[in-house]
Image 1 (cartoon, rainbow, N blue to C red):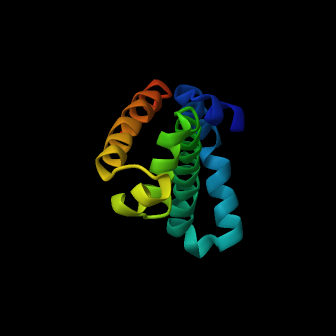
Image 2: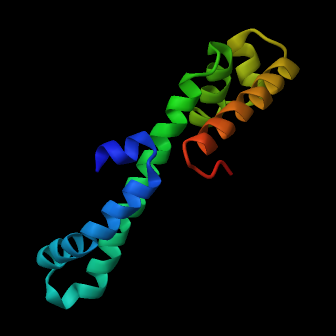
Length: 122
């Protein structure tokens, strides 16, 4: 299952979800108890949603890792550390308009890379 998720084979991942939906649900019921069967369905579904989120996050990090270092720095400072453009400009010793350009240019390749890997890049 892990190989399908990491390699971006959505059809294979969907088949595994279909195949193991029942066993995952039964496991959730066995843990929660029969009286919580409706909640067990939510737990089973959440385990797949969480798996998809983790898969997308790994893909985003891989895409960012393929960018030039200055773009990586600008993106990480802005999105991961919540730094403002002016703060990034100071840290990178660059004019604010240059930082804005870095951020703008750095967003395009990951969107395309994510779409190539089968993710919605919005």
